Length: 215
Image (cartoon, rainbow, N blue to C red; front, side, top):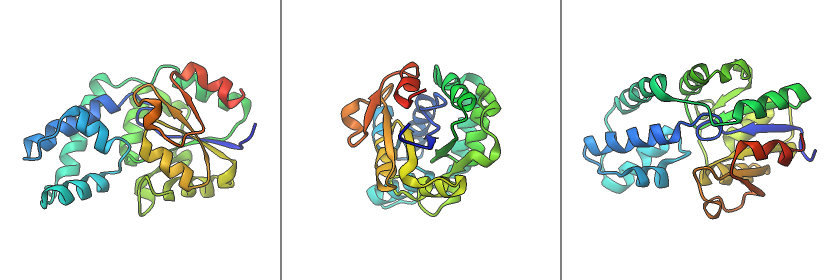
């Protein structure tokens, strides 16, 4: 193996949350006066930490989002997760194989710790991700595409950045991994390969990932 640890993004890589959250985000932004389609939400905000959504809306409209925006949005997202969130097909098997092979892994997500845990509990992935291997943009000053989150995860896990491989499905995540000096594999189930420029490898299903990782 050319790496010592696998770092997973969460939304869209481990849990199939992007269609749910982007539909709700587009609807909520439209509701409060910032017309947004689902496609625009995916294009502009997929992979973003919440602070980036605030910054982009203010930059474009000159208006700040409501003070309770995050609270209301997350309440809607968590309710929807409880109803219909599922794991990305095959994701649990990949993590299980890493665990059995003794390969260190963790998750580094733009989402909040609460969002990560809600999704993992609903999908059963909490069996593979204990608290100490879960890292969120909440833990650092800047979210993706800044490298801070991935560098923080590597430091906490005791692995040199250049010995890490990142599994990502957003351009922001790919950019963050490259900025951190890490290898990155682009998951194309929802994002076309050409929109994951810079990724060292691309794969379309989780069934392909074990062989790519050398398991």
